[in-house]
Image (cartoon, rainbow, N blue to C red; front, side, top):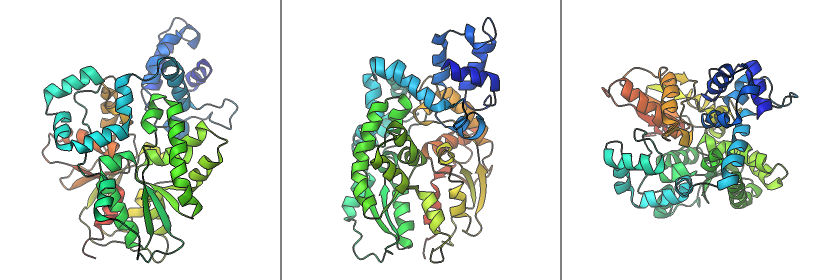
Length: 416
């Protein structure tokens, strides 16, 4: 860690990214010698705490990433520190084990959705103070609502099947629904289904469990690897039958494409899953270049503030959400190319929520200032975070709504 921090100190190109770097540089500048050698290692925890794992330092700023001989990978160094100093020594606390088990909380949350949505609401001051005290979740952080009918339940209710679909043999996808979409925002999966079926694509859905991103953020690397292997066992038969894996949120795409492999680089199954995985906007953007793709023409949203999620950038696929939407007529798109500051659990924890708001305000300045504005992002938590800040900025004079890019495309097919 000292080797990497010393390189960062000599460079300082990342001073304007997350708070990890200002904290590190302040520790060094305020030390006895003004160099890293006089900084106590016990102070490093504050640097690690401020890392949101957005990967922007690694992707866009650092000149010393592999194959450079310095071999700097700041975000994954932070993960290894969290694992070595916390998980390996004492493990996750009982409350963190519960919070990071998104499938358990999702199942409970969806079953008791009306009650728990009320309990977790910011308007419920007493319950939020209790949650802050016992769980360390900031009382002012907006928490995502649970949906009474998960997407899995929806598929069972409608008895979904692909029988009779005129799907082209060259277009077959299996959608990994993701925990957030399944339990909190099933309308995104419904929109994806509408777009894919509109374009005669064979669609199957698989959701065995969460990809492990929340536990990765906490440094619980063994648990993530276990999830990677179990989920891959469920997805591999589809890949072997020629299906492309689609994910509905960029963090999950990143996990399947690269993070799982980093935990077990020699695992051929994980390599196969990685090469077969695409982000939903990436896939739709690619097939939209073919002659038989159907573009919608009915516009319900005009001014779109389109946020580019950090974990979309981390995949190095370009701005596929813009490519996907640009052929819809009369759609006014304004790109927000800044980190929302949310960073998953980082954006709701008592100690880090103020930092998340600080960086979110910087990004929210790019949002259209008009009543018909909507915030669109592949990352639903980033969209919600920016929306909360934007509504506060306009003193709630008009309420801004949030959407996934695939929902905008699905809406454009209305009445066709």
